[in-house]
Length: 127
Length: 240
Image (cartoon, rainbow over all chains, first blue to last red; front, side, top):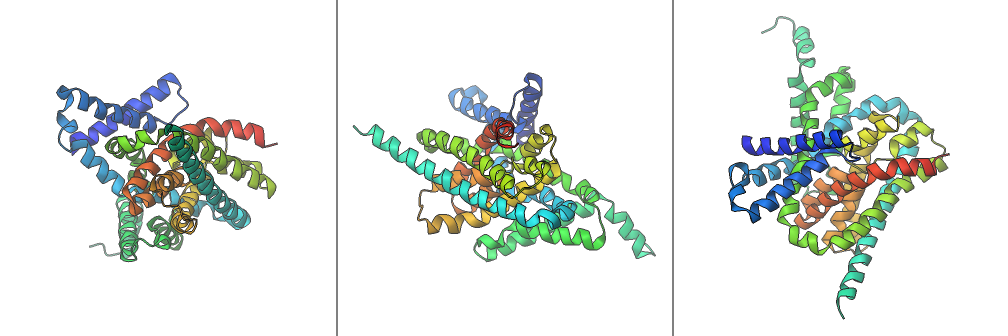
């Protein structure tokens, strides 16, 4: 558990160092995700890597535990709304309306694009 | 026991312990209610925890900074949780590899839609420039969106709020919307909600279906990448 958590933090730390050091235009944790994924894939290829948190269900179990309550992690940022009450009193209706319309449009456009692209692909792969 | 209950409150209200406990306890109750209602969209645990804690802070006259002193331990875990998304991605690598092309197309189209729709609408109703800039990255996860907002000299705390509001709206609306439009492909449903509503949408997707959750997680991490590249571009093109 501690070793698995350390591995996750280490991936994030390496990600942050790479992003800052190389001036990459992406968030550190996303680079950390790519690093952890590469480690897991490499472990399947090279048996020698299957030790510590990379053996058994180590890092997998800890990650599932973290993701099981992903919504909880957004609450501190969300409560920040109390600082913005005066702004929301002035522009709240417009902001809420815009966000709602935007989210519905984004959901529909994304889902439609995905379905059309996947249908075109399966048709393309059949002779 | 303190002889003055008020001094005990003064002590506790400044300690991280109280606010961390309040955050976890409120969430635990909200989540239990959500489970009792068979995960009804309107029983979203983030939505209800947010207003309950918010009201509690206002009633007790506690500043957000004091609250965050305790809640930051939870907030910090957003980073490690993003890294942890590698695991469902790894476990479902075959399903994911088979759908890589539709994912990439939907990613680009969806990401552009998320940014352009919010900027164009905000321009149309005449919101001030500072607010528009803060709203633009609202579809990516909180930490990333706040970084983008900072680099645009917008208001990161307003961005965080619009991120969470967007996430809640997406999570509440996705199931009824997709059921009504008759979309049954859980890869597509998950991908859409992860892209439009980041981690809160992803959490919702995991509640509904495991495959949907995986695709939501991928969409959320890829969108974090694409949006950090697109928002500065969109802002220069769209805002006069």
